[in-house]
Length: 184
Image 1 (cartoon, rainbow, N blue to C red):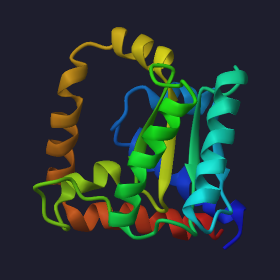
Image 2 (image 1 turned 120 degrees about the vertical axis):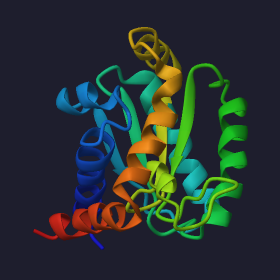
Image 3 (image 1 turned 90 degrees about the horizontal axis):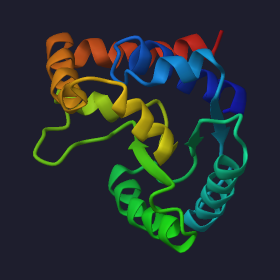
């Protein structure tokens, strides 16, 4: 699949699910201001992905025009268990680069499943994306956003309640629509 279609599907997900459902109240402004970098990795193994991750972390640190990066990797770590295990390597890379406290990595995957949930539970869709994604965030920006928002600790609970109210079928339809929209 072409990078353009992959980015279109992930952008649709950000617009329609993350921002549209207000799952992350901090995302709208960055999307509107075009400060979100969508990067499709061509990695086919974990080592290549770690190299891309390092490059994107360094870019995020040095390029003030980019506030956050979505590192999309459609060809590697498509299995959620493998993806979940890779997150330890990603955290280790942050440590090796001395980026702990500077950047953090949020994780999204088409088969994301929180511990203690069933695969079909709607709450898993808070972290389900069209493709595997490593979301790179600046810690300082995140801290500013959190400081300007009241009741930030209630966001996960509100999101779970919202998605359970919408149900699994509605959430699946929203994700499927992103693929349909990206093909136009």
